[in-house]
Length: 289
Image 1 (cartoon, one colour):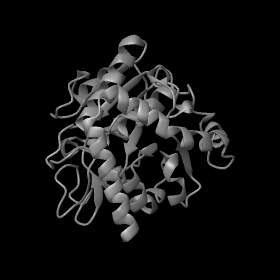
Image 2 (tube, helix red, strand yellow):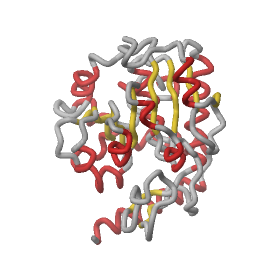
Image 3 (cartoon, one colour):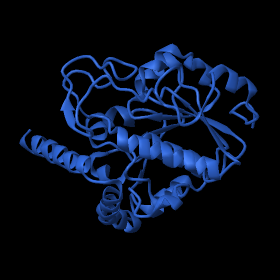
């Protein structure tokens, strides 16, 4: 308990420091901080770079001219007929598995990078059949062999579409690793659903807090329910991440990203109704191979 409390205070101190620094310094520090992990990953024969290449060798570029859905965790998911996605290629994030029974299927991929999510819920995530991608830094918390690990990148944003060089570190969300993986796998159209980009719980960015009751910021009241430790959103980092994604798609016009979230505050991308996009998309799903 003491060790966990100490880690929590350290994380909150780092969050405070980030909150008072300008972007260029934050980005430089994040890249420097990533170097030890990145080098370990590069030469780790069991869970590192070679394992990543082996795990993804049949996925890289495989899904050109296909579409995928990245399912967020916002409350708006409760307004979506998720069974429409049964025959779609899907990415889920963190505790998305709480929706699996309601959806009637599991997502193809499950992505998680947050310390507290992985340490508190890795056993539940490991019980799913999804192909999993986690932050390399927390590899020792994972017992399952069915996990591919990725570190934060030490490179610049020009390597955004090369997730085999790591994921962007200052982004504020696992969402961006999922987008990087989707691009790496070759998907031509990425559809976002459940990205409300709006939290009821307020406080300093990235602060680690212990939930004192039902969760109103996610699709399930137990997502970060009573007693769960989680980190408050960093809107500056999210803004940076979404701008990075928007710039990438503006430059790579052979691919597209569409936001089909019901409501919410994510306005960087073209917005459409999910049913309309699924009916009119020129890109294939699992039924159209």
